[in-house]
Amino acid sequence: MSSNIGTVTFLVREYDEALAYFTGVLGFRCLEDRRISEEKRWVVVAPHGNRGCALLLARAKNESETSAIGRQAAGRVFLFLHTDDFWRDYNLYSARGVVFCEQPRHEPYGIVAVFVDLYGNRWDLLEEKSDRK
Image (tube, rainbow, N blue to C red; front, side):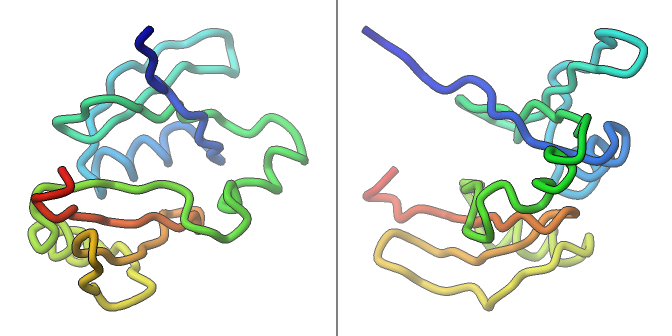
């Protein structure tokens, strides 16, 4: 049996705002953007070279969902963005205005730094050590 997580719902305020951030700032690809109804779209993004999971940008539709924007993991690191070149992406993201919560650090598993997205969700930018890849 083979399985994988294909898509994760990512709550957003507005589709176009989130799409601009993920494609323009983080450099993700838009895999799909289609209208489902007058107020709902199916918008999927993923990093270039992605080998698995993608994000479904889901516009919050009620007060409960709106209150969870930026708090999808209750303040913990929510997503782990793996890279093959930490310093390239760290410098690029910094130049594009991404806010890092800490200085990059070397851990037994690789180089990592926490950043926040446009909503406040915490992410790890991570280049794993080559013996862990």
